[in-house]
Length: 255
Image (cartoon, rainbow, N blue to C red; front, side, top):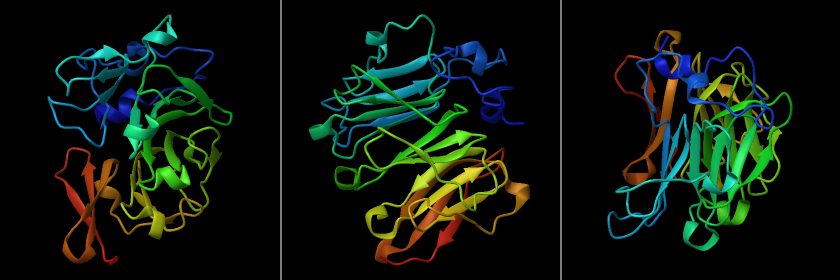
């Protein structure tokens, strides 16, 4: 089993408010250090002149205000008694105006609207899942849509800037969601992809329903996904597979 999946293969789902997940919870393998699970940068990120970026790690969320030269604990104002393991982080596409940051943790999504200084928890429905991945709509300023992928509980969607969340798993046959990808034209085509232990699923209606993509089980699990846009609107799906080269699934949609 790959290290990423192993680190998040917990025996029980742990509520955020009842248990602060530590680095030991996610790192039973002594060889694994405080890895970086996700990075997110402000849209105007141009190091070192300007730009804020965030790093999600087993020991919490870290923020850099100088293009990644130095880092601070983004959860400092929470005054946590133990490290709060964070597996996902995204920033708003209009970060300069709304200053919004979202972090995926055990049991919910943390929201900040002051550039990652103070935080508010939005709990996911019980049983509390662990959020492994987050994507944000490119049209977030207008639609307020975020999508979260969780360990063993599938996909959750919010259309009110992360305030409330609902499970959207119709047709999703594998609920162990390791990664997500959102179309750069989501406001128009509502296309989402999820990578799971067993393959890739696609939704073309914003997550309301999912359909399995033709994908060999021998290539699973799918650890990360990304959308590529080429000339003439040709798009591809880039996937990182366990111990295998990067694979590409082509999508023939034209925009």
